Image 1 (cartoon, rainbow over the protein chains, first blue to last red):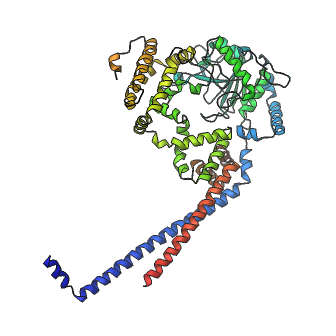
Image 2: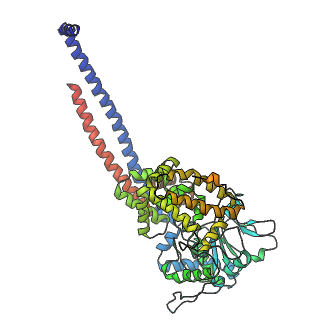
Image 3: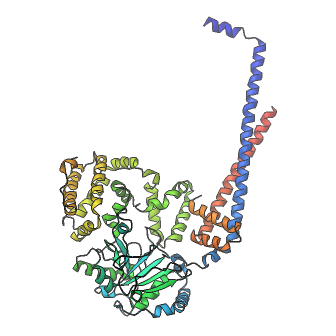
Length: 487
Length: 73
């Protein structure tokens, strides 16, 4: 201590002066550094302003080009069709009828119209294959097999079993509307198939519903099918069967919805309109009739999105559950990239952006878009969907998620207790390829650990043992090794 | 900037830069959904960014001025 004191005491005035100079130097240096930093930042900001001003000018100048861009020689979007006045729509219809007259005249009126009242509204009636027309919009070309059949392959067949999706989807009496799964506008191929013929060739579908009818297999196109194909994408037709199919080449300035509507008229089928989950309310009699026919024939009748099979296409069992739970299924891939940018946008701009983006790409009611926005805001950061985070979330979500999971399992495999039709379970079994079961069981085993601590864990174990065991045996013909399934 | 807006902006750039290939650029514009409302959003976004950037620039300039006077002492 004494040394330190003496050390302090022997400081000369010269030392103090030197120190002061050095402090000044340091101070100047700091100021200088700050100044340089500010100069750089100013330069950056000035450049940014120049860029923003230029971008603004360029975008403003593009204003007169926008309508031009939308009226070029490519088909208008569905949303643009909705925005057209009635007169404009009729004018386009007439123009398209004249242009495709030759092709349309070849179509025989083989269908049967639905019954309507004096106001033109559908009356309660039985919907049978005779008055149904099955429509499929697709970007994939149909394939000819060795038997000379023209087929729309299921994803499972088309990928030699790599994609576990067996279902092959159609809409009834209307071209599919864009929905939560994405845009269905202007696809390369539209297959318009008389109901009676498709059932004659492929049997009844697993599910009969206006907006989503499906078989759990590849579907053969029967005689009488009208194929609308985009300019330059003509499909091959089996040799000697040229007369079985009517091919129409769609020009790029025609929306396939417009052309499909004209084909339906020529085939003498009634056209309805569908939205994301069902036919529009004014066509509710259609779904009612279809459901009544489905019940009689022991078919399923309802939107596919609620059925369990979708889970097999998703990233995994738990992930699907969680995505469903947040109402986010299908949203993941669509908005992953935009989300981070979106999160930083000011609130009022967010709202504008969502509205416009949804209105531009999907013809949906605004409220529905809003609901989706709310849901994505709630838990939608796609960065959260890593396996680790999901496991963590499942643990935290405890009862709610576990209950949801057990509801799904109960719903599918319980025989009547929860009033889920047996047909659903049968469809389910048919739709799931054998290999998927083993995968699903393995994946369940992995994930089940994350439910430790859930209130209804015991119940879940029971559900799993009971309801996976039976279908596993039915499908594979083998017993599940119970030892492996002990939790 | 959200990706949809970025894509639109890139398409607009393509349109302006490639006068020879106007058709391609116009198609790109329509395909990315460059409709009037999207254009309005882009402009609103740029306006907002411009205001914020100018404010920031003004602040920085005053700071730089202060630093310069500080150096004199």
